[in-house]
Image (cartoon, rainbow, N blue to C red; front, side):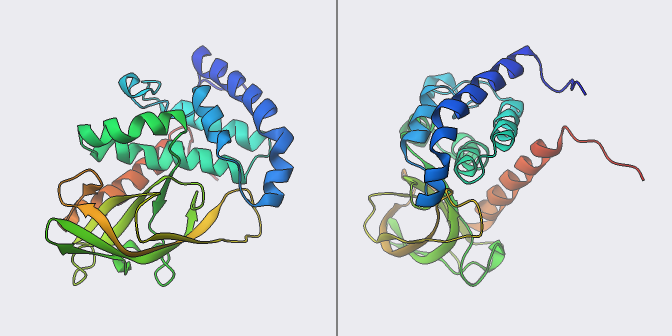
Amino acid sequence: MKRSLYNDDHLAFGDSFRSFIAKEITPFYAQWEKDGIAPRDMYAKAGASGFLGMAIPEQYGGGGIKDFRFNAIIAEELAAAGIGGAGAGITLHNDITTPYYMEICTDEQKARWLPGIASGELITAIAMTEPGTGSDLASIASTARKDGDRYILNGSKTFITNGINSDIIIVAAKTDPTQRHTGMSLMIVERSMVGFERGRNLEKIGMHSQDTAELFFNDVPHIKLGARTLIHCDSWCGFRPLGSQLDSRLRQRTQGFRPINF
């Protein structure tokens, strides 16, 4: 059945990405599944070919096209080729994390991170799930304690996609632990920050080449107030962006579907 969802540009993009999968992913995928991780250069090659950051403005090295159908094509082509684990790293990078940097970062932060996100030089992750809370965001136990002009981050996260490969991680933490939905902030933890450690690359039943890791934050001291690693702070500001971004991705993923009547 011919679909009317895509135009010629979308179909040409799909052809290009299909060729990219056949050349750069499929021949190596079985080994990546054995290794439990995809190599970092998969992201660099995808970025160089225009398959990362399609919606990122051109001034930051992206495609400059806000059209989620390009994201949908990537997901479809990965599924058609049977690329599960490694493909999930790409779709998380494009669909889940990139919108945070585009929509709630300052201009200085965008200039700092978006070029690397678009090129694949900076691999992204988002850390919400915790050992004791699952995905119940209101109950997270990670804290960011104010100390002068900075926050000190402590806590742990688990089942974090791109947890091993990631260079920049959006971390949800409580800045007011007495509150549930309020007092939550989002901050970026960069690979080199003191006190940041990665745990195991977790074994899973499937999707082995998707690196899924434990992350630990032990007095991470480089979260400065109003500076370049704090992207949303206090009150509803942390909880709402998390919820709204996830809701937005869900709505975009379901726009092409019609209800089934029985």
